[in-house]
Image (spheres, rainbow, N blue to C red):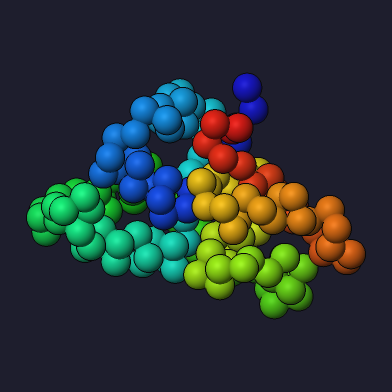
Length: 147
């Protein structure tokens, strides 16, 4: 299997780091086997750090748990140090949820093969992108089950 470069949205990171969701076990296995390189940029990491401070199912992670989750994210991922140029970003479709645009930009900047998400607004772009004249997405947007 060729190395796949992927960007995970924040909810996938939470499934991995906080909830240990079995629905993404195959992603973990692929990453551990060296078949997947997970990419993250500063903006996406900052969102994850902020979300880790929130309450989940009536419980809050301790500061130590938050730090451990963020450290695991950094250990598991490769930091994207550059942003795509403005003309490159302009080629991306606009997500209905402006907060999700950062994941598209990270995937573009990192040369990702896929953006992994359960977010309906992002997944809808896969269906819409063919109808958008003059706009291309050079990576797939996939639900974890489809990766």
